[in-house]
Length: 394
Image 1 (cartoon, rainbow, N blue to C red):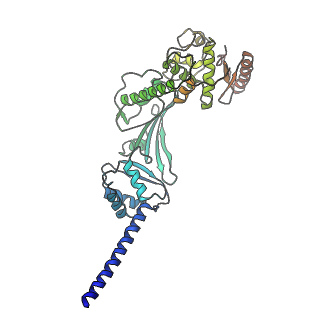
Image 2: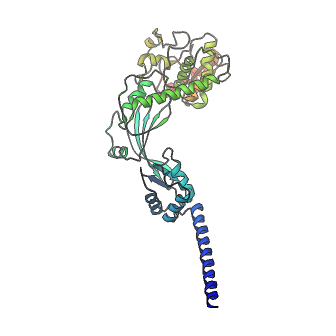
Image 3: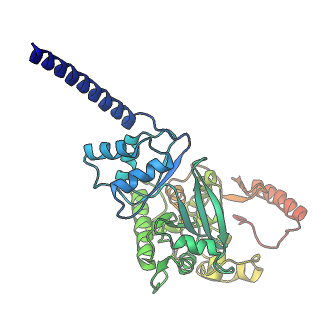
C-alpha cells in the first residue's frame, strides 16, 4: 500500500515537473520569438571573433533582449552559434530575439554606427563623420572638413581607426576622372598609388563601401566595371534610330547632358535638343564642352567664357566643330546615360536658362530669342550679364 502511495506521489510530481517544463519551454519560445523589450532602435556592434556568450551578454546589457540565457539557448538550438558576423547593425524597436539573430548572422554592409565618408564633388571634396542616433534611426553629422584646405579634425582621425567604422567613398555625377583620382588621394583610409587617370567618362558615380587600406587602384577598377556594365545594359535596351554609331558616342552625349542640367526631370528633354541638332546637321553649341577643352577636366573654370575662347577652333569647341567632341567631358550617372539613349520626343532645338535652375526650351529661333531676352533681363537684375552666347544660340 505504501509503495503504491509513493509511486502515485512520484507520478504526480513527475507530471507536475513535466507540465512546468513544458510551460517553461513555451514561455522561453515566446520570449525568443515574441516582441523584444527595447522601445527604441538599437545599434548593435558585433566585434570580430566575438563569442556567442559575449554577444548575448552585450545584447542583454543594451536592453535589446530580455535574457542572455534564452538568446544563447535559442541560438544554440537553431545551430547558429558559429554564424555571427562582424559589423554594426540597426535593430528596429521591439525586435524579437529571433529577428535579431537573423540580422547578426546574415551579415552584409553595416547599417548603423560610425561612418567616415569621402565625398568627391564637382567644386570641392569633403570628408564627413556621421553617427547613428538609435532613438531616431537616422545618421547625424558629427564633423566635416575639406581635405584640400583644412586640417583633419581629431574626431574624424579617431573614427577612421575604429575597427567597426564604416568607410565609404561617394562620387557625384558630373565629376571628371581627374577629380576622382585627386579626391581618392585625399582619403587617408585608402592606400596605394594611382599610376594614371582613367579615361574620361569611364567611372560610375555612385557610393562605394571600402575596407580600411583598400587600394585606390582597385577602387578605380571597380568604378570602371560598374560604368561599363551600366553602359552595356543601357546600350542594349536602346531604341532604334538614334544618331550614335557606338556606345562611346552615347557616353559622350550623356556627359554633355549631365553637365548641362542639374534637374533630373530635364535630362531627357535636354538630350532631345542635342539629338535633334545632330539629326538636322546643326552644331551642338554647348558651353560645357568648350570649358572642358580649356580645363581638360582638371578643376573648375571659375569665370565666364571669353569671346576668344568661343571663337577658338579646338576639338571640344562645339560652336566650331560638327557633331560630338572626341571624348566625354565628365563621368555621367546612369540617369544621364539613360536620357542620352532614351531622349524625349520633342521638336526643340534651342534652350536657355530660365532663372529657376532649369531651362526654357524652344522649337524656333523666334521663340528662343524671346527666351533669351527674358534670361538677359534676369541676368541684368542679378548683375550677372555676360557677353557669352547661351546654350543653343545658333
